[in-house]
Length: 462
Image (cartoon, rainbow, N blue to C red; front, side):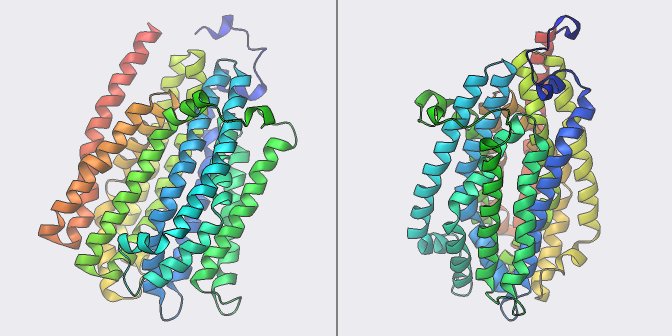
């Protein structure tokens, strides 16, 4: 597309920036606020698990309890992600085509879907919570902690949906700073409230305090997010006429949002299966070690999501305009930044696994298991960054089926079968090795898919 001959007067200043600014610098400017928000959110998870692990007398079992509870929240969050990411990608593409009315139609339907789904799914999860946790691997020692923590968090399901899902369209219109501010508000509030609610020098509510601090923080974040649409001068607004659900609009949201939905659902299934094998081969403390590893690695994984999501409106908007050169450059810039972060992260985790795990685990056997797992799983972080970035790229250009395929292959076709095979020979060590083997295999497929897509974009440029 020849920028010299194109008229940009119909674009907003932020849209004009996405259409004309230097791409590597633009990716950084859009990604840095998002990365900060994601990083603080990941830091909250780590601090939450750290505080819980320090509860006197029950720390290791309490940590295992919230690890077992994570799949429940992740499954509920998958629906929120479907709505939020699906709406955001569609909004970016429609704004790129100049269809602001269509973008607002998507937004209004997303708002209604969040309200309906959060209420229905939250109540259903509360009713069946105990059998769900038992099926997920809870024991007589971990069930009380898992039940207390999860049941309280379910009371805030609506807050979770609004603070997570409705924040994504803000990113889609290019307002990365506001998107990050919503994440920061929730995470920082929770970090501040956590110790006050948990320990005896404060309210002394123990693991229940950890859950209540999250609910209150998400309530504050959801209020902040929703104020964007009803006050000031947002790029797109929630209008009453657009809140009536439309099958075609829901289909458009779902067609792209189904990719992150499957990714998170499969991630939950993977966590459930891993917990079962860890408990069988290493006991409840091995589950706690897995939770600690997941929390620490998220400090590097979540910024990768931040980079990918910061790049998404740039790629989606320019794809909608038909500027394939900017689409390619946006993807490549995002990939370089993401892989670089994970190379540094992987080196750090492989060098100091015992010291890092010692912050969370008191039991010597749990510490040994956790350090071994971190060392094994950390070396494929750069490969995982490539896969995550590729998956988000396909979502950004409307290729949802390719994004879904990547997720299904990595977790469903490779990782889950490896969980059933490797522990039979190597016990807990087999659980740890399943992840890097699956990552390397899925990386090979993702690379072929990306090279194919780049060739398709080159043909459109010719």
